[in-house]
Length: 170
Image 1: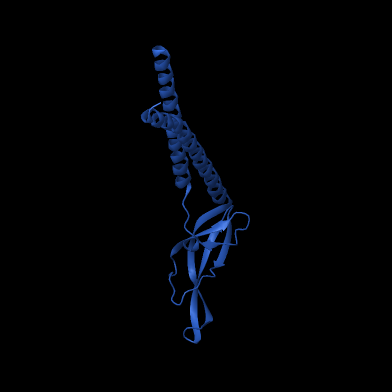
Image 2: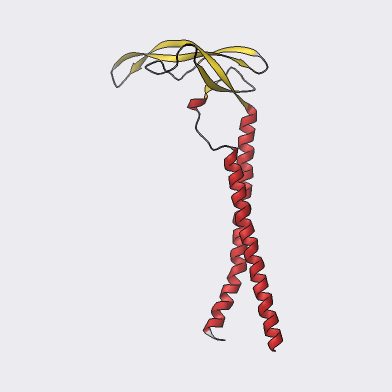
């Protein structure tokens, strides 16, 4: 067997292995997309986002170590109606040295459906990719898996042609 034939044989054997690896990676991406999508959907179903009316800014005194003195901080106070229609007044624990919201502004807050009084400013939540990311991850997995299947099929066709060619020569 010549060196060229050995190299071609090695390449033909590596195609199905590479295809199987791509298929496994693709399946992993699809599963990761499904799990992430389920977690985001579960979070979205357990929490509710509403627009809240700023009714004022509560003032508090805090010690500022950098300035070595007490400073006044402003915490937005909002009113919102939670599902199924209960009204709440909530003071944000996130205070700033200057008021950032004016009376009458609307801001978005999120609260757990099980405990509507435990709100958070949506601007304070960490930014996470949404459902679109999960769908994209799943589609990428499908594409990678399809490429893996194509490699396996191509290697089988090439092997069959080689077998048929050697059988017709013999």
